[in-house]
Length: 364
Image (cartoon, rainbow, N blue to C red):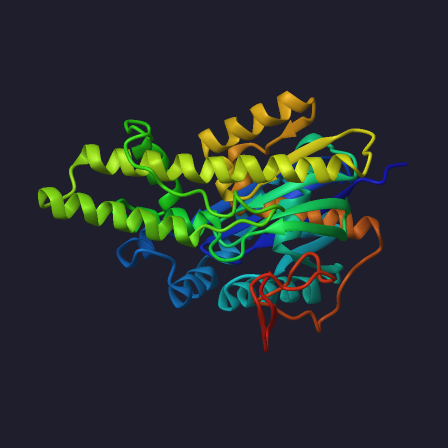
């Protein structure tokens, strides 16, 4: 007898329309298929993601992504055990598109419907890829989020620090715009920085002079703007070498901030006495090579296992949603047709909001 389940996962929280099929059990699952349909070309002219354009693209592509995922996995709807879908947080139009499709499929097939927190998908990815045991320390670092979490279980997360303003991915996007580089900013800045001298420009490392694990990236972006303007004023423009040096300085500053704050988070985590200490990094910025290398070196110094998902599972994808749904299904958790799309949905709802709250709830 087996406890294996086959879960369809649907993800549409930002600008990637994704669907995937995962089979297995908590801590031991395989990705049977993963389809991601990006929208970079649709948003390129606007310097960032346009919510209305993203929502319309999801409506056009979601059913295609699901069909391809099922075909590549060689399973039919009748072989599934449940349908998992991102129910938030994210751009509400995209989230709503995915939730409505999942509801339609669940209603038509009678399959259980499982609403998944997009951040939990990232947070549980190290369980999918490396079978990590609870509790482990996680740095969730992406375009819209940056926080340190102790992952105690599939539904239990303790935040021990995070950004008080911009997320690193957002800062990379803004840095790319300031330097005249294409979007998305993370890969552009990383590629440009390879030819640069990180020591030519001195940029700040905000909050490193203060205790704790909280971070700030807004001031770093402002410092980059001033450095760029100084170069432009001095020579009448920005040359390729200037772009590379500024990109290298910016990336080095972000890397230093994340590394030092990770060191402090690891000290906090170690005090919990985990049997198998592990530090995982997840989210789109986890695909950045220098950042990943610096965090890996930090863990090697302290003898802590370092886990970073494959690059394809760092950015938004349906496999992480399917797996998070599998974890919830194993606990007997499911939703009904009242499942709502949520633009805001913090993982640690017991901690005070770091970025404020409004009518739609805590931002993070």
